[in-house]
Image (cartoon, rainbow over all chains, first blue to last red; front, side):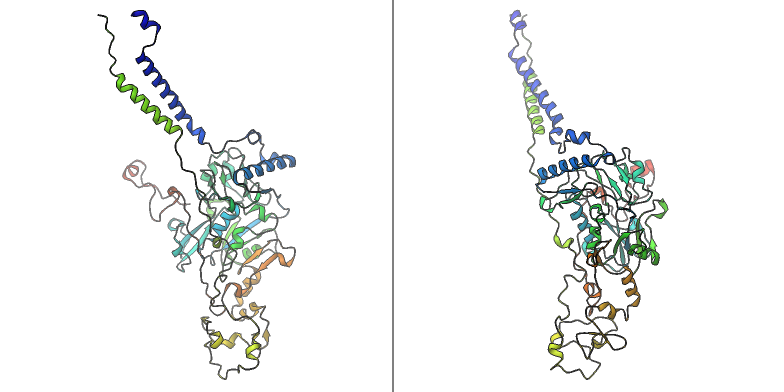
Length: 307
Length: 218
């Protein structure tokens, strides 16, 4: 009787032990199961990729080819990733005529369409603030007014997007230097270098930066295949993004998407260093307002009150 | 006494562990519904139309005015005539004080607009007509402050940049904008949406601990 117990496991012990072992295994699996949901697993090339400003032309060519292949695999869209360099003697500036904006939000959706931002969760670079006439009181403004409250003559509408500051706080706080100011004054982000710490989002006084909390969901037929590496290529999950004045358009001479779509012509864009450009003429003539001037960011996005 | 101890608690423990294992297995491989593509953006939210783009109901007549006016429509005797009639009945004239047809249209040549000195203005250049009254806005339009431009900010050829003229955005007979295309507000997570006049940390406990916190504003 005694040696029988010593040499063999009893049925009860077997059942109890095996059920505990099975449960332990299942619990370990449940604890590790979030790894199965990892929607973005970087490849070895992506991990070893250098910072954008250290890339040679050949490096860029291979990286762009890899990214295009990834986009083709994920969305079956034949994208063309370009990287136009900054133009000499060009500093971009934006002028927005508050007196003309009706708050129709067409710029918001043109921007989404152009820049391949996530549709769900929705990411929009432009917020149109509805402000009561009399003073610019941001505290009592609202950016989620319904359609029925647009074009109200008792209010004015102030679209706020990235102000492309000359003294940008978002660059100072980036711990990995994944965001920087280009020669033409546009603040850009290397999405492959960004670690997603969101310091820059906290530092921006204009709330202009957006974070990809989830993998950007876009219907493949809505993807804009004309992509720029630093601007509107499809972003991975967990990186910051923001308005770049549509780099891939403006650096080849076109206007940004929000500019072209404005039905009232309230938006004006041009080269600040060209004395003949419309932005220079407007800034010299009209009453100019700089949003949050007191924080000393020196934006290149100006608001004017004009007819 | 050689008696095997009765481990009666196993009768509860073993089924409990079996149930737990099923629970954990379910946690590991949940039956998740397939994510549907998000709703597409409507094309009208980002088309390049101007404020007048869709509003064609009140549009002026197009074509050669001589087809009627040269031969069998007489020149009206009274200059008081301000009510568009007959073929022009669909025009709503709502241009403030400017309520006479022949303030703008030339009596002797209906294809043209009339300038201050009585000469004609070609219909391709309506801005010259509008500048008779709206001179300041005409200056702004020349500068680029007023009016919509599309195309390229750095035009090489003239065709690179399109400058919209007065009548492409304003209906000359009823010049106030009619805002037809309005896009919906953002659908953001609740924590981004700040309701007007509502404080962010206003429950009694946080009031006690950190005092009255100023409302977060961007």
